[in-house]
Length: 233
Image (cartoon, rainbow, N blue to C red; front, side, top):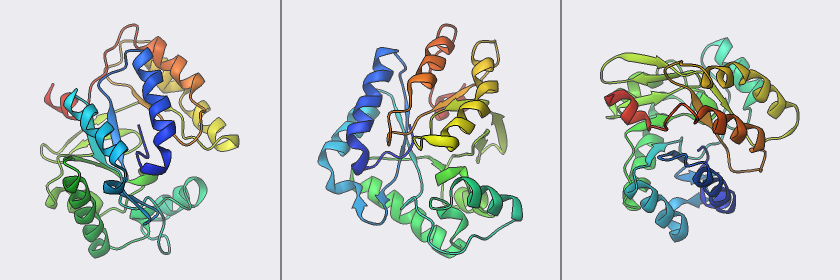
């Protein structure tokens, strides 16, 4: 579940209810510690309580950027800049800062989680977009793993796991349609014996129905796991 932040709490609760109905548990909760630079997590006691309860029951918190917002010119290689400009122009946080600022944001994000009694050993950049130097920075900061759109990167064991995917980005319109079409391969893999398939959801808009149905079908022969459990297994 992406974009776990105070403004989206109603959508988060609705989505968790749908996942409960499918018995899709445990979950991975990608938390934005200070969305837009205006919504620090600790100011939402209701969301903090929800995250603590999820964690106590076995779910896993992942640090999902710091503000989740682009804050400068896009940098890095042209393929990353093209993806960011086309699909996440407002959310490419870790393609719009340099290493020093990125480190500051990582530390600030971890401190905000710690203030709320939460821990994160994994990181997923907003929009799955990160500069080429990001994995080494994450490793030096003590993160165990790094999530990109199609891979789970083990930062300790230096291996990676391919994760075909399907999901909902919560934008609606053409972008949502493209993600739905792009996730067809992952939905197909979910009905086979393929080792790992990732299902992702965003809480901003209730565009989940087709993907929840894909998840329901996948769960006929699969069980949900967290990223840490996947690496441990």
